[in-house]
Image (cartoon, rainbow, N blue to C red; front, side, top):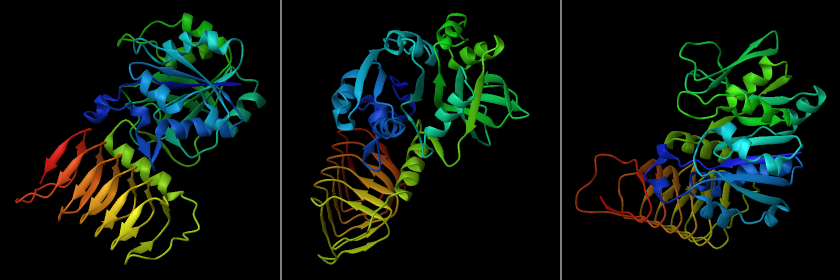
Length: 353
């Protein structure tokens, strides 16, 4: 079995940050989203991976490389225009060949192993298997209708409620999906929808099975989703918490702290991740915070934040929380205090508060 990971999206809902960053390379617990997905695929025993890339292709290639760090073989497939998930599958046909393959969207994260879905696919001799997740508001997703434990219909973004089971970004296909895509017409938004292609499989007698996610799943397309996913991943930190208590700093909770980080006269409350060469002085770092490489935090209070590399926060008396702050940002105290304390800040910005 091969794997296809889609990493061509531009992340419009996370602008301005995604003007200068590939959405799939934004970090969760100081690791790019795309890396979390690749590791899930590798854990399932799949090491031949195709990555669909678009306008951020060079950034993705630079970050991911040839796959050596995972003992994987990575092939890049360029999609010039975002013409739909089924179109991405179509242009990957030469890479896939006649093999079965698992497809994962590069901006979805989840804690369920892929092995269960793969076993389901093989045991049922299926043409496709999809991973579903139960939500309260399914109207913005592809939705699956299940009757008597059997998948009977798929609808992309239904206007009326038909089911609370949404189609997540995890699918398995055999080569029959290519013929189904050929028989699928573009949707009203001009895209080849993978939901329509799977429905075509169903309508022509194909065997499509499903698995409902046991655990959590997040589409990281928006700020709150990014922060939620960061929290969920940090909650799963495995650590022995053997951190040397020194420099008048108090450490509590589960922590991932680089040995090259410098921390003085501060309180660090986990779950929290602090990356290489970060500097934290006279500050409080609260739970669910991820601090990137080279970040400097001096005389600040921060919690529930993702802070990208080489950013500097200094002398801000009002606590910063629920924020995603880009690379090389400078936020410093000014004479007047702000009324608000949450930010979505792009790279190379400079703020005085």
